[in-house]
Length: 186
Image (cartoon, rainbow, N blue to C red):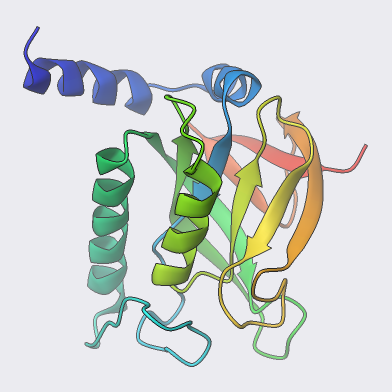
């Protein structure tokens, strides 16, 4: 089978992911949830050195371009990528807090690359994300890792969010084919 056909089959399989398939990936591999989206993608005030700089007044187009670049980066690293719907409070616990619904990416470390977590952290910093969600193999002890200078959770700070809970909704959640899942303390 040629590489193009292999990639087409892989992408088709990943795009058809269900909640149970997502759960299976979490049981077998380290995973993450990340996005390139920002409420204001041109606001660089909380970004770290070396971040992507965007200009323009069409936030929708900028965010789509950011996610397309992120997907390309993730796939070039050999990771599985599934588009999911994320719901997140940007600038959490601050006066500027607001709920953001965004096109997020569920990322699977298919080859069990030892640099997976640091690669996701670097991409979170490059795309000036408040945080990335890192999910250790087994789905237990998932945590947010701060990837910009925002107060929550803070650059380099970890905040444990708990374990996988399928079919539940919360303030911070993800949907796969419109089925929600969260991470929560037992």
